[in-house]
Image 1 (cartoon, rainbow, N blue to C red):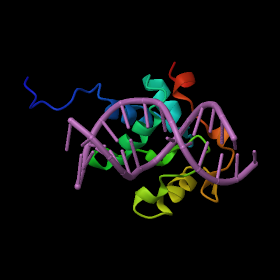
Image 2: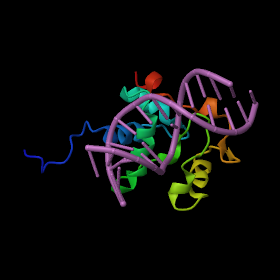
Image 3: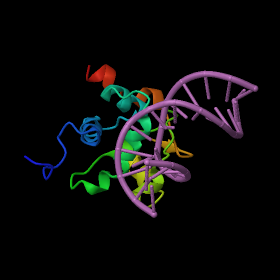
Image 4: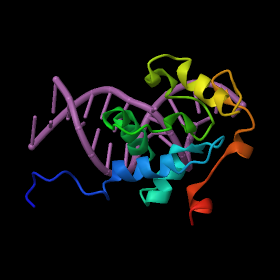
Length: 116
DNA sequence: ATTCTGACAGCAA
DNA sequence: TTTGCTGCCAGAA
């Protein structure tokens, strides 16, 4: 209908949520990987922005499974408590040390490669 | 309308 | 190797 309708499901933000929710248990991915999967490529910042507003979604978004390409928990501060993100990852068997994911490369889940 | 910021990533020095 | 700047897109002031 008119613009009163909310944005289409194809909205960039929604796409990010969909991919994020597709991340398997005990796995993680990076912002750039998701951005690239969506075709934005260099717009990795938008992925972070989308997750930033993920709190607006009633659905639970496993944003703790999304980290930067260094495997660093850059967004841990956005989970309310700085230790929440690490705690969630640890709960899934992901070991985080010094705000960095251990065996990041092994735990890395690339949507381009997995969902291709 | 203009400017700045932001959960990143890539490249240059 | 680390540090800093730039590019990217969208939203808030």
